[in-house]
Image (cartoon, rainbow, N blue to C red; front, side):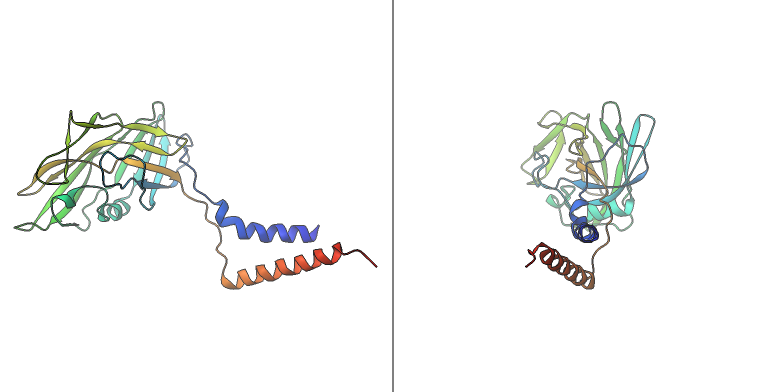
Length: 242
């Protein structure tokens, strides 16, 4: 029995990182807690749920009939700075103005599972002539009916429009953790005023993975030695007696 317990404990430690997989966010659990959010980052505005960003930290709370996902200003700034959440780079090279990003706050109706984000803002420094700063205002909702259209200039920039190439919104799916909020990124600077289709509303939400102790090199060696000793002991007991 002791041998089995030791073997079970050793295997449990070895397999713990594998067992700590993240699950889709349970929006019906009102417990305030940290969660993860991922953004769909395919280049095409019509692509849904194919390529996901690295996960970013967020929080979840629920009160009454509303669940609220919040990505802090710092975490949202990190996601924006990847330049994978908008199409500003189709207009000009740009950098994020430090400290300009607001938080992303997403409200989920727990009856319909439709989701709407409060307007989010961030500043961009545009490498145009003359160089100038602008502000992007982002509006997203799963109930929005809209899409995008490309014009000859600027090439590769999808303008937000109705009607045009439609992109379907989708409420939160508890089985997958996904939702698709449709909306716009409105960029205004002294010489630029464009309303682009937003690529930041195709989201995947998941529970934060359970933290498990990491084995050091010495611990792995000790684990290997323990398993070896257990194997020898079990083999010895299994030999037929002369």
